[in-house]
Image (cartoon, rainbow, N blue to C red):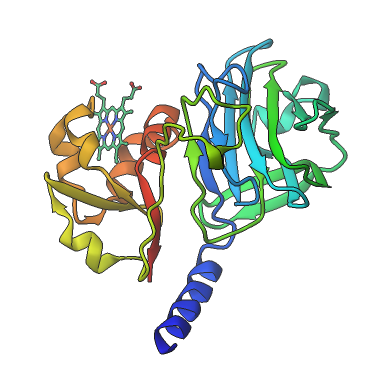
Length: 269
Ligand code: HEM
């Protein structure tokens, strides 16, 4: 009982500490259709899905799964800087949300509300929000560019939990619970949470955990595949590697997308 209470308190502190720490998901150039894009297994968990485009006519897409009656909360954001904040609404990418029954809604731009995200220290503008009671099943989100631009789609509002992101599954139509998709990120249950102490004990090439931006990652399998060499990853084992990662890879979709595949969970404090 006591343990449970401590756990709850720790989580409460943790949650407030990482308020608005939407879990980042970066769409790749190959995520051109909902079926090829990532699936957010629980669409109520707070995700920030980033999509960047180099010119008009490009498409990027993803999926999110909901249970009947879940809150479907979608926000369309741009970073409050050029070129995006200087673009007319008609030059920004469109977002079409298709529900499990096939009905489509297009995100309307009806606000320009400033929002400072303290965690990543980024100024955003909300351009539109869409809320509804979800139907059971998988929603798809298709973003189509009209010029060079980058946007962030916020999905879900549940903070402080790590959401599962599945890539490469061809079983889009099936409920995930009854299928066995190839999960690239499967947070495992860890009753006491992922503490710094545990990170420190996984400090070798054979078992390599690292903390990046408040999340714990198991990088063991990535060591031998890293294009920048084994040493760069080994040097992060057992410690907080945020500075090293950010210094090398900040804003790089490929590195962030790769990293998101190794998430274990939030760092417990
Ligand atoms: C967990 C952490 C890391 C992940 C997931 C990661 C991921 C990646 C990925 C996906 C690439 C290929 C990028 C591309 O093809 O565009 C890459 C390249 C590279 N990474 Fe990392 N990286 C990590 C940490 C680091 C660190 C800490 C350093 C340096 C200290 C580093 C140095 C490099 C370099 C130099 C390259 C370029 C290699 C080349 O193009 O020849 N990486 N990394």
